[in-house]
Image (cartoon, rainbow, N blue to C red; front, side, top):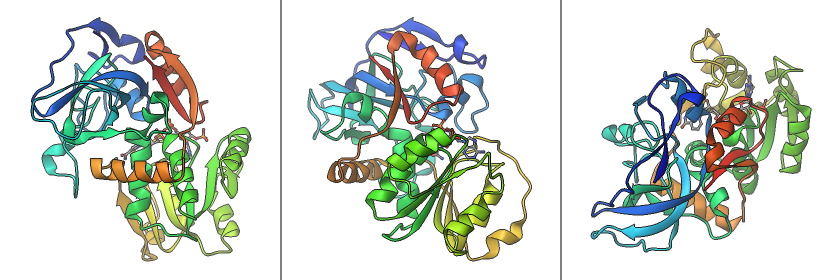
Length: 334
Ligand SMILES: NC(=O)c1ccc[n+]([C@@H]2O[C@H](COP(=O)([O-])OP(=O)(O)OC[C@H]3O[C@@H](n4cnc5c(N)ncnc54)[C@H](OP(=O)(O)O)[C@@H]3O)[C@@H](O)[C@H]2O)c1
């Protein structure tokens, strides 16, 4: 079977397209024929080295993939040949808190991922994708969607809350869809007015161009009549965290998710003394993935896909994501 392989830290073009035998599922595993993959910001970092956690190589990259079960191990119950599935990002985190050893079970980072024609998954960490979604749509769920879902659930989002989303990347757009489905008011930022118009069409109530307003917490305060927001999905890191904390109201929650602008910063710590909660989020459990799928099914939420590439064009898909012109998920179809 064909698979991509990251063997160096020399970037996207150093990935190799190789052949190996189709894996045999162990008793507790299923064999999945992958029909689609989706890329995340993390997948770019993994080709360069320096991803802060479980940066192992050589490795089959990519956490997100959806496909059809083609064989089941002898001990597997509850899944059958023909099921349309995706794997949980952490193959070792099924329920409750993330167990310590499970941090080293991330697909496409610590263990072989999904950018292959066939993969084996732990049956307990395999999730049926919603019926109203295609394989391309289902493939977008494991990382960005579960992360956004986890962050909003952990912040105990309720109807009427105000949610601030940074940029229009994968995590933020799922955050927008989930927050609106749960009755929240949404403020979203972007570097592009065109993307902000599209975000409005997806339901965003208020938009801010963060290039036009580098101190955008002032705009957030104006929109919220000085109250600040209840929840921030913080994906920016170094260049945005201070503005995010300044945008949150008393007792607001800032979910620390991503670091697209960098890992290290200096900030005024006084800002966070207003009984705010800063919570780290690291994707989520299989149980969260299933709960999210039920909500997406109930509300008929469809992931936003920007562009679909073929398996042979996978490197072009990576380059396209790296250019950051996308709005929605970048998908590779097999
Ligand atoms: N902790 C976790 O479990 C977890 C899970 C998933 C992702 N992440 C992390 O979350 C981050 C986002 O991931 P993603 O997959 O959503 O990325 P993505 O689809 O590549 O989107 C990145 C977006 O970041 C926005 N951005 C860049 N600079 C910004 C700034 N200064 N202020 C506000 N927005 C800015 C851009 O939005 P515009 O184009 O609209 O300007 C861009 O589209 C990454 O760091 C990723 O590693 C973490």
